[in-house]
Length: 484
Ligand SMILES: [Ca+2]
Ligand SMILES: [Ca+2]
Image (cartoon, rainbow, N blue to C red; front, side):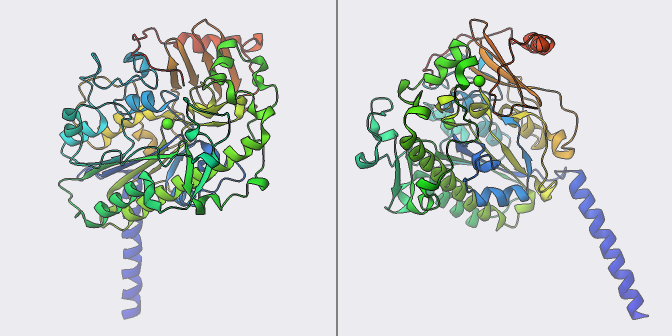
């Protein structure tokens, strides 16, 4: 008798468990409790480790995080550089509607932009406790805005330092007049020489001491400075990569790839001075060195991401926390004979995104749908029931994809580089158009590295017409800045 009772109890418990699982999975966020939100943004991280696109890249913490998360391998930045990408995803507004197109534009306090509220300001005004450290806006911010944004503000923790010491600089390959940016150097000083490590320590401190409060959830923005140049990282991350054994060139490089690219595309490939433009062919030694530096810094950023996530997981309110890991833009390491970003190709535009949903819904799954960083703000507004931003978003709420990652989602991502210079990406195609009307078209079904420009192929006339019809009509005057 008692054993059959036990069996019934077990059955009931199993049914209850399944019901709860179903509840958790069908509603990503319980309506009664707004989730905590953590946004971890790496700087200039491409798909090498995130999606395993480079055979030598090691990102074990991201791999583990992806096993608990819903991954969007087709996520794109609104602009392929730090300042305009952040201006866009922190407001939910695309560059062509604000004029914040370029690095060096410092848009935040300029006329016309100064009234746009940013992501942390909106969270704070909506009753969240807001915590920010590291690289966030990457532009001049007024004290008033800074105060409106954060309850707990650690600032940038410094910046890109430590720079490349002279002995590790690559001679003649300077960057903005200083060799300190270019080279690769295994750092043997203390970890805390790195702003990212200081940020991680502050995050750990907050996460391990701040009591869970369902009445006042927290919003945390962790802005990492790596893998952006200068390629310095603690030595143990360089030790992961034997420079002489690195498989080079990277999978996306092909000789003569620029031959079918219009003049403006070739010009963008040469921005940052011509020093790197032909280095793929001419400087294999320094290319390998830079690759080692980029991969080491990618693994360093991976470690930083993992440390923050582990601290979140140790909290009692972990299961009601939404964690998003992504980057502000992608990165070329020689593909199309180009370094860095600021182009309209996949290597610059792709910012893979992994989303750990409350309750662990869709863990380990992948959504094939095209989304963008500019979708974050409207998505948070919906999920976290935030106050209206005061402006209409260009991005869209992607929380329906959090419920059903396979939902039909026919919205291409727009990546804007400058006035009348932009690219659309849908699940199959990339379309690029430059200010003089020159175009590129790539078919990702057969050409994932965008080697074959099909814009002149009459077979694809209808595809070109489709994207031309989507071309933005309004282009705000620019706040200026620089091309790279
Ligand atoms: Ca960046
Ligand atoms: Ca080509």
